[in-house]
Image (tube, helix red, strand yellow):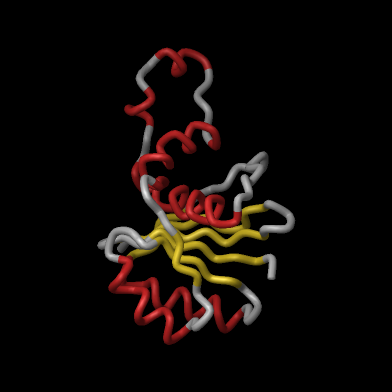
Length: 145
């Protein structure tokens, strides 16, 4: 099973990444409203029966784990300690600063809407011990409404 959907659960929004472990390629990186998570996972599960699901065990994960385990019984619950903090560092690996921006504090360039998807990527990378080559830049979508 090489396709994986990783979830960084949150109270108001969740980061979601769909990737192929064998190819080390990210296909989707999105931030969705927490209310839409179950519907999103159900849709992905019905589209691809062989996709593996992994969810971080941090913020508000207990709310989702019980419901998601009924839908996807083989879901992996993974450690996500400091994933959001580490996502800030990883953000600049994916989206490096160029020119005069390199001399400014990095913190002023971080857009929090992107960090949830990157945190989901970190959860997946930590669990599978695989680092994804993101030479094809991922574009995070936000469905917060």
